[in-house]
Amino acid sequence: MESIGGIYPKDNFAKSLYENNLPNNFSAQSIANEADKSEVRVLEKEQEEKIIRKIKTAKKNGDTLGGNIIVVATGLPVGLGTYMHFDKKLDAAIAFEFMSINAIKGVEIGSGFNSADLFGSKSHDEIIIKNNEFSRKTNRAGGIEGGISTGLPIIVKAAMKPIATLMQPIETVDLNGMKSVKARRNEAIL
Image (cartoon, rainbow, N blue to C red; front, side, top):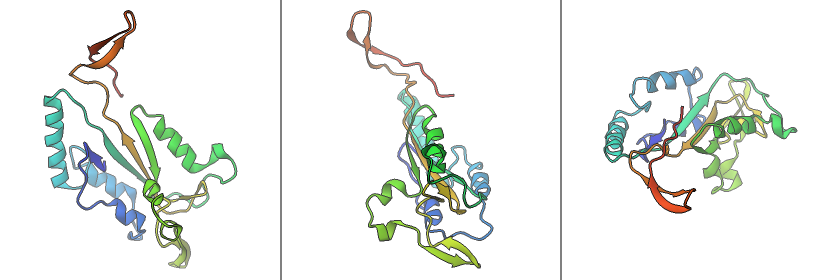
């Protein structure tokens, strides 16, 4: 998790991913193992404590929280996907799968939305030689360029809205009388 209820870490690990400043033996599994030590799957103890307090407040108020999820995949070869066929582009397939999850309302690959605010010279990943192999200075594209994997870690962020299973009623419409009523929603994300 990157955030829950708007509570972000002080030192966001994603920055080192975007800067392609990782050790040669970096594995996404190491991040997952660290996150598994937290009740809410975050990497910082202070953030965890704030999130748990906010979850308790939401529960007490009969409310719910959303959050941002970061998924990192390592060990993928160069060349997965295609730049020619829209339905076989790796980034399109990943975005489709995330958007298929109930309550996911946004998907970002690499520094996606932030890149829209930058000059191209500050957004694109320059190609370099690193350890006698082609690489990139940065990984702002999130390991995918033109629908094809680059061999760098694939970085995907997804935004999940608060689920609608509230303990307090919200306004809706009674279809029998076409009148505004207060009701509790009962859908759940499984």
